[in-house]
Length: 222
Ligand code: DX5
Ligand code: ZN
Image (cartoon, rainbow, N blue to C red; front, side, top):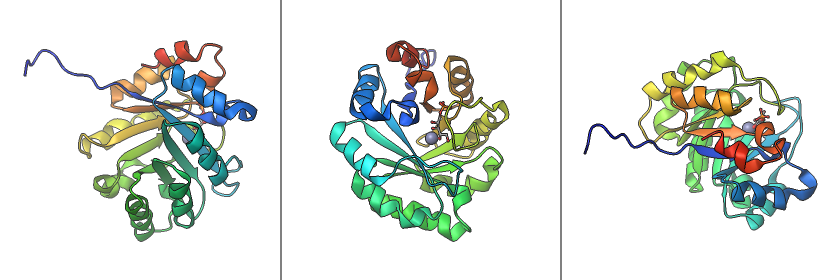
């Protein structure tokens, strides 16, 4: 292989439908697909793990019928182990749960194996105050780590730069196949920072859906 040319993998863009027009969800999903989106990010909030309540299993089921894009489900819920089967059956492809929603290491491992047993890709997410090292032991068992760069709960918040420093820390302890995803406050500027630190997937809600031109917005993240 020629040492001078390094193949750069394209970053996976996962628009968060949290900022989409919920009364036109199917067309909002089609529109970002046509604009170049790779995945669809679905933010599930239960009013307990986070203060907000959003959408759940029936919406995933409907989206499954509406699109062939990968459904990237971000569970911001307590007791994730009770709901993995439902989200898997509804058609999620990637299921990401929060490390902080599990009371101990056994629970974390149980949730990961549930997701894997349904043949889905497993993701583990950490909130801004959780240190990267807390999840190092789980890295060999997951497909994705979601680094939150805002406090989970709401779209449209400002990117927390210090959280992005966890990306290289995780990268260093994982093999190349692990996808490090970043969520919260992603725009054309913060996307560059995250990519340079080793992120392979970017979630963006308001930056895409509040832009009049979805294609232009997505292209500016690449
Ligand atoms: C926040 C959610 C995010 C949110 C991102 O709890 O997990 O996915 O939609 O929104 P923006 O891109 O607007 O920060
Ligand atoms: Zn999210």
